Length: 473
Image (cartoon, rainbow, N blue to C red; front, side, top):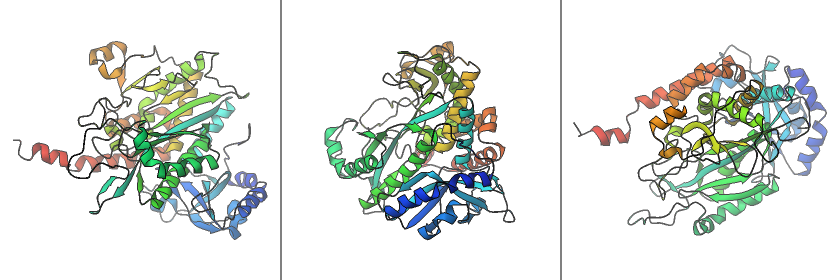
């Protein structure tokens, strides 16, 4: 994406013309790489890519919007259209081309959806482009780095999921261990998997800085370089696909579920967000100090923190991880997860951390179940609202939130993050900024699905309830 290039196209014809001049160079690159098949992939309401494979012989028609069409609403849990309505048209974004490292005959190109010649109103990627265009018009460009965490698993002889990289016996004595975070032995045990990931991400040009063995058995984090919001969204979705494919080669599978068991450390996906001006200067850098713009951006993010969290922590299971302590925790005492809507200097117990080594805002209340396009749309929109309206977040909280009392929170005006999905979606429903960022149709669809998810969970009888109540009374 070049400087000041138009990002969001309000009609299909103009978007097609943008593609037309880029087709020859992209076609040449793909042919030279030996690509034979293209998956032009649009993003659904949950942030999951969908596609139909197309041979390279149809590459030009595909790029001109004459490729496969989709009845997107036919596979939605909450369709907003009917069988009598028009199909959606997919238009690949030729700045978002990824040759698959595990099969170089195949390329994935991320795409935008149009419906009746206008941007489809349940296309999360279009929502992010719209938010980025508005930011660019205001003189800002959003940047993000995301820290994806995940657990590598496999199925045992009974078909039960277990940790893939775990050299303790499945039965018998399982000795007490430290958390596996940073552990050299556990890292070496995992290198057969991690080496390939490091090499692939470097070959993709993502500038991977390190891989972290996280606190739980078989849990890892990948740290690669930041980029603009759209590219980071595409990279995260491509990474989810890539991890699954490489895991299959090693007879494993990857889960992005934040808390598969009570004892697991939560798998998060912290969002490190910054903004640059038209000259490329980081507006959060006030010259060896935090700028006023950063403080106001934090204010905007805190104002909409609950609604943002409903998107960045999008599942029932997400909220099991946003707690200070857990009984039976593997190798630890506290979770290091955010618990309260506040900010602090390098404070990992706060939702918004101002890191000691970079000028950005780290939102720690995010995990890999998020629709990253909607998450980044809300992030930049809330930050700009904060800057434009000079929303001050108050004083930072530079103390351990895990050891503060309710009376201390009340005195300082510090609010708890939503305790469950229901509380989060109620905040989403009442947040006015989401009307603009998501649009009324996508917001209605998201609320409908998430309310249904909560109700299905709420009606389920869990193993914990049976153990707790079966013979208690």
